[in-house]
Image: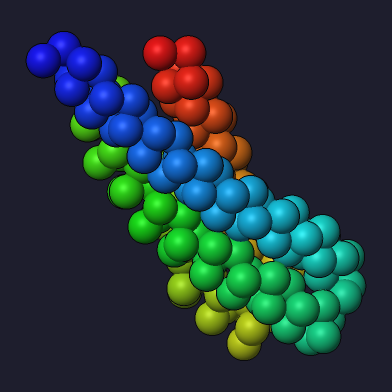
Length: 142
C-alpha cells in the first residue's frame, strides 16, 4: 500500500514541477517584454514622441498577454502545489487608464506615470519568478 502512496506523491510532484516550469516560462517572457517596454519608455520620456509610445505599447500588449498566460499558469501551479502540500501565490495586474493617458496626452507627466507602472509590473513579475524558482527548487529536493 505504501508503494501506491509513493507513486501518487511522485506523480503529483512531477505534475507540480511541470506546471511550475510552464509558469516560469510565461513569467520570463513577460519580464522580457517589460524590460523592452521600460527601455522604450525611457526613450519616450526623453523625447521619443508618438512612434516610441506606440512601440512601447506594443511591448506592453505582449507583456500583458504573457502576464495573463502566467496568471493562468500560476493558478494551475498553485493547485498542483496544494496536491503536494506546498503554497505559491502571485498576482499580476495592469492599469488601462495610464495607457490611455499616455497615448492621448503624450507628455512628460504621463510618460513618467507609465514608466512607474512598467517598473511596478516588472517588480511583480520579478517577485513571481523568484517565488516560482524557490518553489520548484523545494519540490525538486523532495
